[in-house]
Image (cartoon, rainbow, N blue to C red; front, side, top):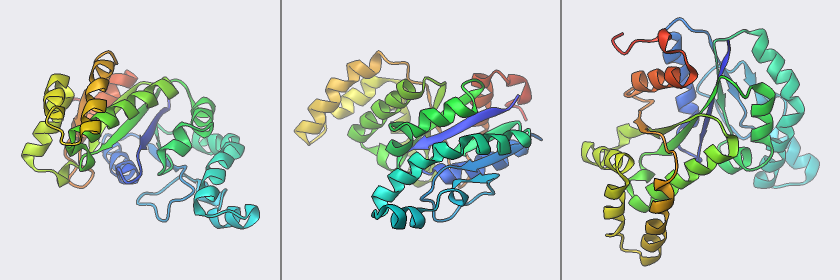
Amino acid sequence: MTSFIYILGTAGSGKSTLVSALSNYIEKYNKFCVNVNLDPGAETLSYDAIVDIREYVKLDEVMRKFNLGPNGALIVATDLIVNYLPEIKKLILDENPDYVIIDTPGQLELFAYRETGPAVISSFSNRNSIVLFLLDAFLAQSPHNFTSMLLLSASIQARFLLPYLLILSKTDLLSASSLEKIISWSEDLSNLQEDLESEANVFNRELSLNLIPILSNMSIPSLIPISSINMSGFMELYAEIQRVLGKEDEISLDQ
């Protein structure tokens, strides 16, 4: 049965790079994987896409037709995706892939908080689906930023009601000590709270500290650190995808 993997994250968090790296990694296990680009504002793609939304919705044409600037055109273009979902779904399923990796728009809010995202997931599949939510490791070094990212990831879970994994991307940009610190925050929120108490900005400190009890009551998955550049963490990521999707027989961590 075809499984759908939705890649979400803030702009610049490494979504497209992960699509390319993950699809290549999955195919090492003799699984047929297809990629879908749903970002009408993408300038270039680092992977081959079975469906590229830019062939259906052209940003420059939207700008001219509706007399909009780049930002307004991107909103309209993302909303227009829903018009092509039946055709896109047929193209995907005609390939009969094991996995479909969906690259979502760079601006997270356009996909997650408008109607496009839920419409895409409802059209493609509400079953055998998983969200990978990316946290940019470079930004996550700040305890205040990390707290905000956790809250954002929780809102994504509430929005889509799908199993999701929390991915720390771009770990190749971090020192070993910075990576260890971020992981310690994710494993024990009391460590995060302790570092937040040293936050110089009073508003950021008080706001973030008030969020800790809320985050403690949420079901936040373990953080998976990866790098799409040196491929660190991909064995663990793929194994966790299999576990969530109930396909643990496909991979052994000893491989």
